[in-house]
Amino acid sequence: MAMRITFILGCTGCGKGAVGRELARRLHAEIISTDSMKIYRRMNIGTAKPDPAILTEIPHHLIDVVEPSADFSVAQFVQQAEAAIAGIYARGRPVLCVGGTALYIQSLTTGLFEGPSADADLRQRLRERADREGPAALHAELTRVDPEAARRIHPNDLRRIVRALEVFEQTGTPISRLQTQWGQVRTDLDCRLIGLRRPREDQSRRINARVRRMIDQGLVDEVRALLAEPQPLGHTARQAVGYAEIIEHLQNGLPLEDAVEKIKINTRRLAKAQRTWFKRFPVNDWIDLAADDTAEAVAGRLIEAKGVDWWK
Image (cartoon, rainbow, N blue to C red; front, side, top):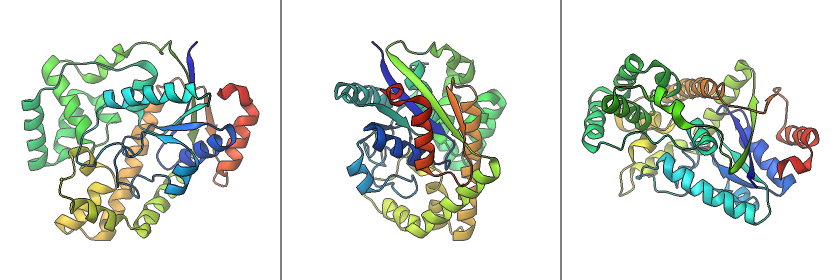
């Protein structure tokens, strides 16, 4: 029998983490994070990780699994997520996958896009060009050769930009076209997707408030400490929204308020890219949230509408 897993997805800042945690409390479930930045240790404030008390209360998986100096592939995510799912299922507890990294969600629900193997020399050339000209130059090139991929890849997501350009140069075919070969929904997993969404104005207000809260909580000091570590930040960690802008503040003299505004703008761009991805997903239910909806109220409505057995 297929193992049932429920995804709680939505754009950054929509409140999916709080809803997922409240569902886990009421259903005695365990959570697998589908957020590509929460995997990094000591990157806490800028990734909006749950605080230690919550992580003690509710079992979470795929959080704090690698050093910020390392890269972490989609294949590694799928391998570790599958192991976590099997363990949770063996314990007889519901599985909730909570997060907004669309590539993680798609890879787990439909299987991995294999693609050509990595070309170390080509990747190095592309990264050196990014160092000279900035990630925006590579993103502009991707827009020219694969506009669909460029629309869904954030301009600061250098790792995925490099991979898309690498695939195009190796095959002559846009990665967005090749990724249609991912196949059908997996038969070994019973995947159910619930999407949370808010009106654009409310979403933007929440994003702005969250960015300011992260600054107040000490994001600048967190980034400063990461930069002081013996091992340099890897490409993925350095390009994460919230971290790239504060690095520019600390290393290049960008005024802090300008960095904060750039974080807000780039986070809104990320949310827009997520909305584009999620339109293609087979979401079972989209839940429209009002500004005054609490996580407790949303979780209660979902459990009442579906029934407890639906989640098991």
